[in-house]
Length: 156
Ligand code: ZN
Image 1 (cartoon, rainbow, N blue to C red):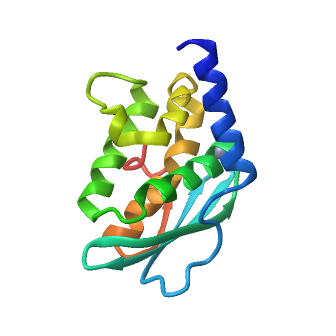
Image 2 (cartoon, rainbow, N blue to C red):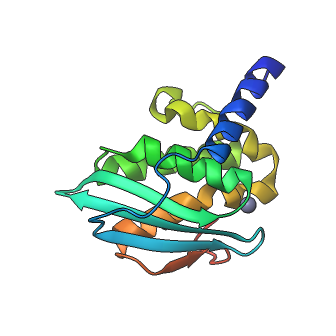
């Protein structure tokens, strides 16, 4: 990755960390879940308003490191208006991006601004920070709540 691109990505991450989008409780949410990453201390709650299989609205709150906050902020922006199966697909691609780095299995057009987190794959300790919001979102959609922790072997 060239250094201009890296700087740009860093800007996006810092901007979303300082001014998280979709931050705060969601009125009328019918799904929610909490997530915890004990390795870093990141905590997050994700609220979803699910309407006929589509994410009508999604918000989050919590506290954590810059990566976890920026990732949650970028995720909520990316998922608003998406159908559940599109959210699953995006999670899959995002997960590949942060664990393997950019590769041919990922369509950058799908990921949009989420590519700003592509540098994370070089720092394995931060992968859980980046994926926490997504695991929490998935739990909210699939089981209708509960608490997920990144120390669960199912969540890498
Ligand atoms: Zn973290």
